[in-house]
Length: 182
Image 1: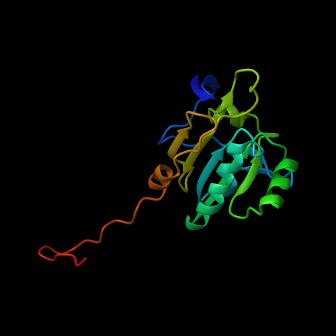
Image 2: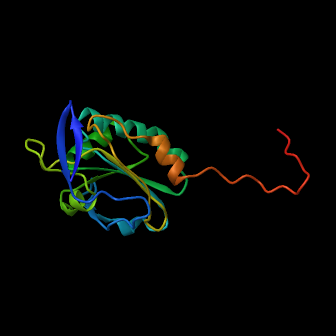
Image 3: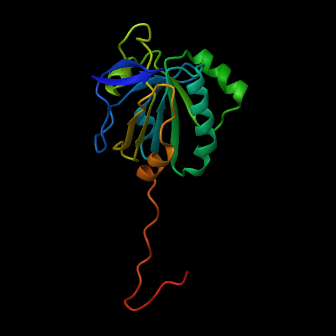
């Protein structure tokens, strides 16, 4: 069991948080149209999965806004924001904020996600919510980055995730004796 902080208070988090190199657990979540969405829907694309306690919480909205601005630069990548909120609340947020660059998904019918992704808050009064996390999967669902944010009200390290998921292009190979021109 992991521990994260909320306003200086330790909060227990259950389940098994993914590790780099793991194959991601499958899931079945619900979109804003109440349609089931499996992980397999995104096969062949990189996945960035941001987990928040609620899209109505300040941290949920902050992370959503950050993802909205970052996501357009990530080719062949789908960005998913997962919370326990109802699809109705998520739909309202989409309209209010005009988010277009990521998908909001609910654990409405996918409560195994909490345990399978190691984000299940077990301490009352927050039990049932999820801890803040950022997980990045490559095209074949291998975990390339996994961060259980140590303070529920803090943003994850987007730059570290980008470096792990989208490494810089390799340096061009040069023939011996040729010096690159700056």
